Image 1 (spheres, one colour):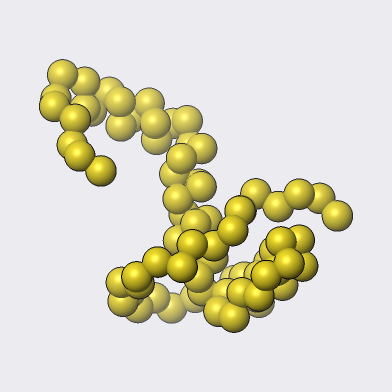
Image 2 (spheres, rainbow, N blue to C red):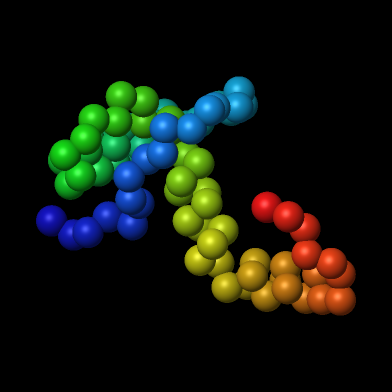
Length: 81
């Protein structure tokens, strides 16, 4: 099986967000959670927990976004993270 892009899912204090997903996307998240669980020998009880790490990974690897962020923050003080 191919190595999945997500690593272990952190058990972090959640923030409540409500979003409606298409049924097909929810099915894909469920299938991904099962594949990730098998790969990492862990149980992912709620596939919705994949959304945050997927978004973080997407943003972290989007070169266009990184360039735009860098261009807009050029010369501005760095914000603490």
